[in-house]
Image (cartoon, rainbow, N blue to C red):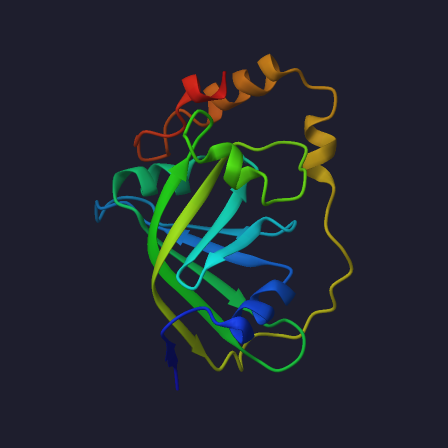
Amino acid sequence: MARLFEQIDNTLAAWIRQQQMFFVATAPLSGNGSVNCSPKGLDTLRILGPREVAWLDLGGSGIETVAHLKENGRIVLMFCAFEGAPRILRLHGQGSVIERGHPDFNTLLATFPPQPVCRNLIRIKVTRISDSCGWGVPLYDYTGQRDEIARAVAGKTPEQLRAKAEKQNRRSIDGLEGLDLEALK
């Protein structure tokens, strides 16, 4: 049976911080558009308040989450207990993309540990907090974070990283507006 919570209190915040991975899901308004679900990790989530979180978007091969948020703002984060007692927690809300040049970008970025790259930040005003049993989630042993992102950007110039973003992050797979490439300058 799912429980609803009024806010991210200290107990929920502690549990969220223990999770090494979470999932992000978004969708376009079009019924023909592609739903997106992505795993996230690497200490990239921050709880900003009882109904506000943010995560550091390190980049990737696509720009679906950013495009969907720019179009409609709908987002859900899902956390699963892969160790200990079973649990699933979902944070539904309205997300916004905080790109370089945004007045809040540097202040928000400073709340995260240094990362080899940062495409943008995502801030979410949480509108619904719920958990469920998680009985079907398998147990896994956490052995560490991957270093592929750091290795992939090592030695790359800002111009090379911008060229990659221009090629892969200008538009979503459904043609929605993606990354503001001017903000990367």
